[in-house]
Length: 98
Ligand code: FES
Image (cartoon, helix red, strand yellow):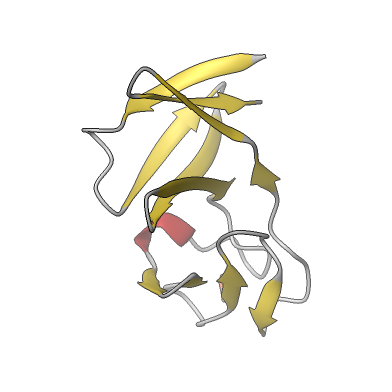
């Protein structure tokens, strides 16, 4: 089911959103929008408060790194990939499949 979570104008480089009680992180990379679980798979750090370098998000708590496009771990201590969500952009609005 598609849920509208933001408009393109509201999303700068990244944003935290809550959908059905689930905390998610949205990122804009080279004009494309990506969505990950906001919760780091190491100890639950908030990824939307981390720092973005190219297509990598670094967790603000212990510096695990994840690929924003795939959710794959690029550097520990996290061992488990973070879940990604399909993003659809329609009429300047961002929808997630949740
Ligand atoms: S909680 Fe993210 S690296 Fe530890």
